[in-house]
Amino acid sequence: MTVTFIMDGKEITVEDGKTILDAARENGIDIPTICWHEATTANGLCRMCVVEVEGWRTLQPSCIVPAGAGMKVQTRSEKVVRARKTILEMLASTMDLSDAPEVLTMMDEYGASHERFPDAKRRESEIKDDNPMYIRDYSKCLLCWRCVQVCADDAQYTYAINFEGRGFETQIGTFFDKPIPETTCVLCGQCVGVCPTGALKPKRQFLLETGMSPQEISVLNTGRKRRKS
Image (cartoon, rainbow, N blue to C red; front, side, top):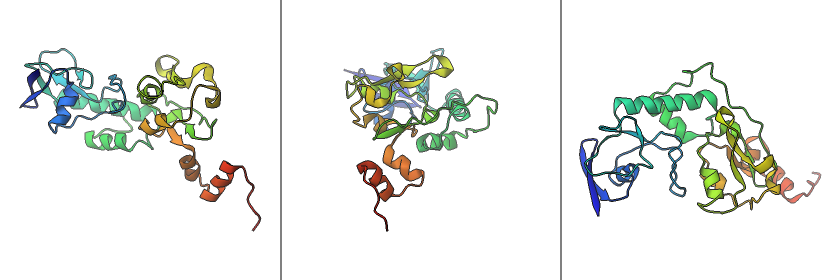
């Protein structure tokens, strides 16, 4: 069974049950995403993928809204572009995007300013370095939920991390704020693999960026002392 609708003036037919985002990608129409990932369940958190549907009061997250027969969808209307630009500017005002190249590219594309909200409170967090595999820098976390999902039902079923706190204070954390080695984490690295902003980073990469040499890192990994030259 299929449904036919209009997207950006083009008639599109897709299988019933496909989302608007699915339909767009199958037909070469670009809709930006941040929280969406092919390995995780879509949840519509970031709202970068919003589109305008004729007759609907609010913009709709295309990653979770099914395509419907007779819909008229606009992916780049003035309202949509303004919403995406504002989302990007709010992210830039509160978090460190220096390790988020995809988001920075979106900011350039939408002409978003890093300075629009100069008085915004920054999300600051100390780097958590408590295990041998990766570091956690939640100053760079935009709460996309990808890491939580792959740690849970979408992949690993270990449930080592989840949301904690409320409102602006919300962040990803372990239960009772335990160090990673004291949780159910198996150090599989899947959370690091899906992180779009560098909030989760391989320990080796982090150490190289801080100026350590591969040889110094090797000594740390093996626990051996360096020979005197």
